[in-house]
Image (cartoon, rainbow, N blue to C red; front, side):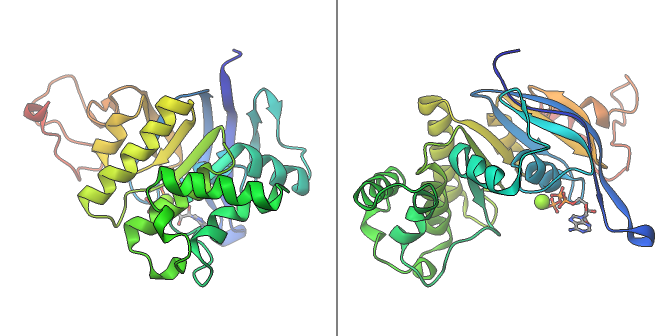
Length: 260
Ligand SMILES: Nc1ncnc2c1ncn2[C@@H]1O[C@H](COP(=O)(O)OP(=O)(O)OP(=O)(O)O)[C@@H](O)[C@H]1O
Ligand SMILES: [Mg+2]
């Protein structure tokens, strides 16, 4: 399939050794198409961030492999991987935050510096990205002085400054009030629609997940459902066809059938 951007086969990730060994991913098969918006959902500890880190080539799988544009990435040397990531991917991670004491502009410029873009061009492109997120007026402010939502927008500016093919976002609207969260969402989906950037978003927010083309639900290191409408209509939570008393397998959540 020529439109497949990222692909995994029997992807596994084991953390720790011996007694503390933990299998966080237990065999993930996945094809992500170019231009798709994909939500990765599931309970805390299910393996969402682990999967995203592997897809973003930030970490190596214990077994299985990942192909990017049809090329196996397993044997790439670290330098090549770093270059590839810097060129193709943008990251909106809360824990991946910026240099707090540096100004906003320098934070956004960083990926361009790594890519070896010349000085004047760097500045121009970073300012353009800051304009997109409506923060060009904060270019000279220290990153640490911004509000949470503004920091998140700087992260988006930095994520898109290199014209990436994919943006990876881990809980991009977590810790934000709903109005700011909505703004961040709008920004991300605009990039998806207008520039064809593939979005891969880890989220606990089912409404945000519903806005994506596709929802992949992870439980216990495995994909349990994959498709459109999964966040609301998740067959993995249905014990039998009888809708009365429908509950999830762990009996932790009542499914509100009427809400559909
Ligand atoms: N570096 C690590 N060493 C050991 N165990 C880890 C490590 N990173 C993650 N894990 C474990 O792997 C499992 C999956 O973690 P992961 O961070 O992928 O979960 P998640 O689905 O993103 O959860 P959350 O919604 O809370 O962010 C968890 O049980 C976690 O404790
Ligand atoms: Mg996580």
